[in-house]
Length: 339
Image 1 (spheres, rainbow, N blue to C red):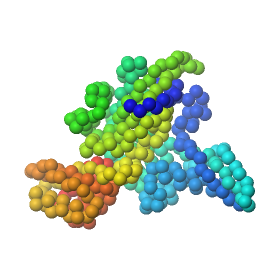
Image 2 (cartoon, rainbow, N blue to C red; image 1 turned 90 degrees about the vertical axis):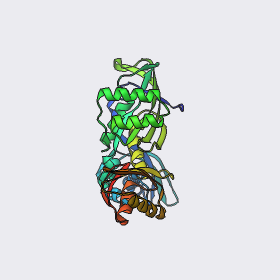
Image 3 (cartoon, rainbow, N blue to C red; image 1 turned 90 degrees about the horizontal axis):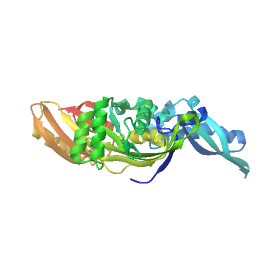
Image 4 (cartoon, one colour; image 1 turned 60 degrees about the vertical axis):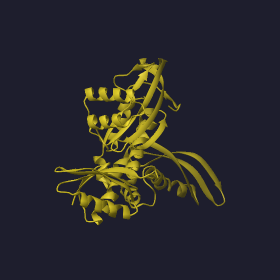
């Protein structure tokens, strides 16, 4: 595990602010933007739009249709301007750096409203946690990251405590997550995407209010349970994981942030034949956007195939429809079709 030391004040939410001000900051996404204009007011007046553009760019690629759609849809009243961090006057104008904040999950919820099919992706969060090598029955990282998924509008798997305990043991027993381990996790959790990793926390003493203080290390991996492909990996500090992961996952589900094609499962309802699948595979490969196309099974219940595609699941659906295939349903990692 990469060393990433985070200062953790209590274990109930991975990081707990000592004051209400700290709690408010934790529930917001805060960044700094640079603006300029002929006067101070003119420069400051640009900060809302510049800040919103930067917030959306954290999740979506600027210049794409969905980026423009989401940028237009978010109310500007949701964006708050804070302090002026730096200010310089000269050359007939003013340049300043302004602190901008917005409610956590604001952009992600707007993306999911624009692309509601992404919200159907089933996400499980399984992150074993240890304090002084003692397993924690209700890991705080899971709680915090899971809350951020729900706040952002993503679909979090609601597993029983028994299932969660069993899957944590699978992750502990197979840190590299072998193919059999991934298959078992997918079956037990009924999930498309797994957020996993490791947290090691060490108690260092009491803090104000009778709470306990900890130092912690957190590294997270986001894995496509259908293909085993790692969609994202990153070391985090404090609540940063909860604030940033939903956007990273949404970007990965759209094929953003990686040049490698994603692996998708295509399920075809009956009746379907090998000839139909072979012909479809040839046309998909001929499109230039699809790499490997592998038929896994064909029987009276239909067929299952796996394919590699460079875009999002909605773009794959559009490609299939252009080839005369009816799309009956989709999630982040699977698409159901009929011939």
